[in-house]
Length: 457
Ligand SMILES: *Cc1c(COP(=O)(O)O)cnc(C)c1O
Image 1 (tube, rainbow, N blue to C red):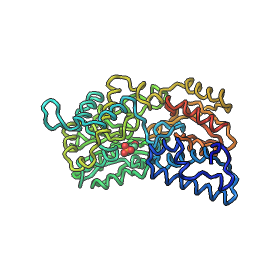
Image 2 (cartoon, helix red, strand yellow):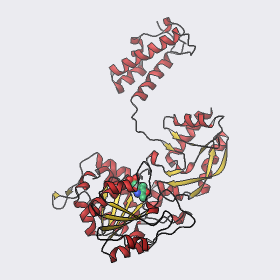
Image 3 (cartoon, rainbow, N blue to C red):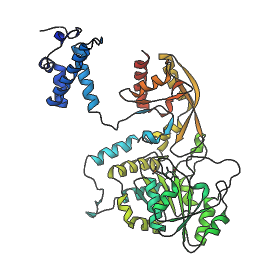
Image 4 (cartoon, protein in one colour):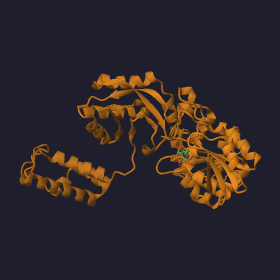
């Protein structure tokens, strides 16, 4: 039986046989990719489904072309890996659920080169003997930040855990009640401190803590005065906290260590972009902190990592602690982190690190992207706000131009965009489906345009 491949299949008699489908050239291509057994199973499955559709009087017209499309689509979905790229149109720059910072081109290239080959990860090319994996980062960090010593672990939470375990286990750390924060994902500062075997001594009140509060808490068991950046909330009104420099001075007068968990840890001044000034790592070191901790994938704009910088003698104790081995980072992380730090060394971080390009993107440029969509598809633009996110600059936003997509149902539209072959994550605000161009990577703008075309046609 030969018939047109677009002829509707209306009865069992119109159904192609398994073998005739397997003879189709499009199916041959699928066999090359997925193997004969897998394709055969899918061919049988789709034919069986079509048969029951016909039996149930399902009126959806189908044809051989449709069947082949269905088989192909099912196979693509079946072999789709769970972790996949998405397009972030939410306007939240450091979106933890969407993987925080996208890497720079150079960082990607560095990962690819090191991951697909052997490397000198722990090999000294000069002497031909064993080298140290931390060294690849330590020298760069020291150069860029001006720290005496540095090390890198899996994430900042791990950094806090290692620091406290190595420096104060069985002893006491003093911290302000205003800084006993929960960072998100269930990361609570008091829990981490307890886990490290450190006795937490809370001082002050939620809104006010003074230097005298710390001073009164110091006794022979005290080892650490700790500051934690209250990353994701902001206190306004009747508040008082102790400047890091004063805390460090007090610590050193009593032979204690001053530890600063910065969280986001900016290296550049966010105030240049109209944002509040986020404390920088350099400032913490200059203020006298012995150890400063921050994330690799927040405002630094690199891979997930915890970076620990500070005094050499103190960092040596961390490096020797058994936990350090369990928190050790992979070569891909080191490659990406080194390439990210290299942007700061070269002074091209704002143009080459994606999250900094997003922060720096001027409003007219965002408006232009939104206007392009209005011209193509209708809809309109509203003033909106992008946020930095990732536990930095809570309550501070960047002005943006939101594209309001002309759809009847905002939630249906949101689902449809999420269902696109590269899922697009959009916002629904006040029953409107909106896209913030700020967090869409330049290379993804055209993909979003294509998705809108499909959605709105
Ligand atoms: C984000 C944050 C952490 C946790 O950092 P991760 O790199 O996500 O583990 C710890 N402390 C503070 C203050 C933070 O803002």
